[in-house]
Length: 136
Image (cartoon, rainbow, N blue to C red; front, side, top):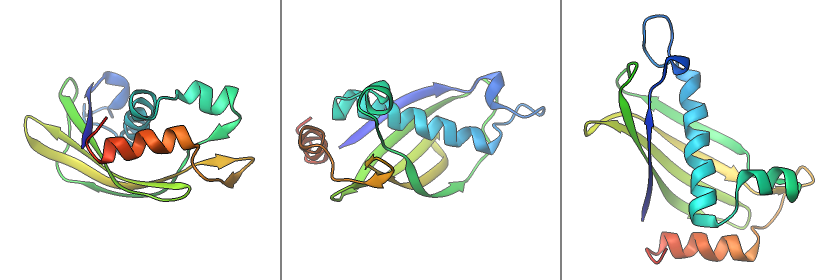
């Protein structure tokens, strides 16, 4: 199953030429992941980081930038879970504009407690597995 989110490119995303400054894509990746956790895993980043004292940082990323994206274009981001480990989540994120891929990235997210990797909470894991199986 694939999770999706649309993001309109804003002025704050761009360099002076009106093209997305590549580090801003990493902020967009994080936005997609944050929304995935809220919508699919059932927990907000506010709860994860502030209430529970846990974290879900990106620990590895490999990005490919295919075509520049300009101010005011709308990117359709997709997130596909490639694998769910004991404490890790491997995802593929793609961004398309009008059906043409602009960038893609393979990311690894790790569930952490007290600055160490820790197994996913059972309820989150169950929801992510249901998503992967197309039952979410």
